[in-house]
Every structure is written in C-alpha cells, then in structure tokens.
Length: 158
Image 1 (spheres, one colour):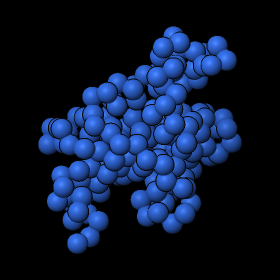
Image 2: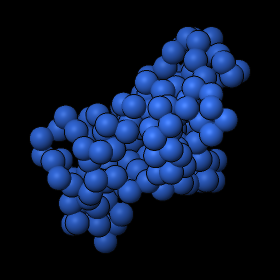
Image 3: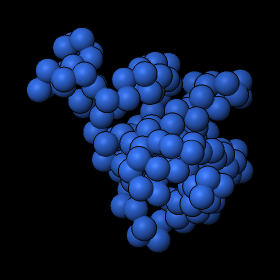
C-alpha cells in the first residue's frame, strides 16, 4: 500500500506548506501540496515585497481555504506539515495568549501578521487540523516540492 493509498483509505487529507523570501523582507513565494483522494494538488503564489513569515502563513491559509471550499472534503481529518516552527507553534500554542491579551505578545507589543493569524485561526477552528513540524531541506518529498514552488514564485519578482 502506498502513502497515497493509505491517505485515500482513511479519507484523511495531508497537506505540506512552505514559504520563503529572498531577503527578509524581499521578493517572496509560497507553495503547498494538498493530498487527498489519491491526488496531489499544488498551489503557489508570491509577492514582490514581503517577509518569510508572511509567506509561511499564506501557504497554510491557502491550503486550508481550498480544503474548506471543497465540498467533498467536509468533515475530513487534516494533517498539515510545515517546516516553520513559527506557524506550527503559533497556531498550536502562542495564539491562545495572543487572543487573551488582545493580540499583544508577552512583551505587550502588537502581534506581527495579526490579520494572517486571524485568518488562520478561523480556518483552524472550522477544520480538524493536526499540525506537524517537518525539517526543511531534509529530502521529504512534498516539503521539497513546496520549496521548489516557493523558489519558482520568488523568481517571478527578481
């Protein structure tokens, strides 16, 4: 049984996301792969002037938005792999205190990328997402593909 067969057999959805920048800030790109029903769907985009963290968040938001907007995916368990500790730790831990503290950090400063965090939080609340960290540039097939999509998008702005 292949990975995709297992994915289809249990009706789960697997997602890989990545975002990056050439310079920080600078031209940026994001990519994601949504694996469901035996198919891997790739999405990507970028901005001329952005940050690495914005692109990491945008990749996760794009993937979860597509899942939310696809009727046949309703109610399915999602496992999302990100190579960004910022995204994974933010959505599974830090965000609770940010919201409790009026979107302020422990240092009483405004949370950076608040609008993106709010979008991600809303999607996370609607969907059943298990957030996982994966080491970047470690030969993980779909994470490497997401990185290629990021690089391709960044190149459009150079």
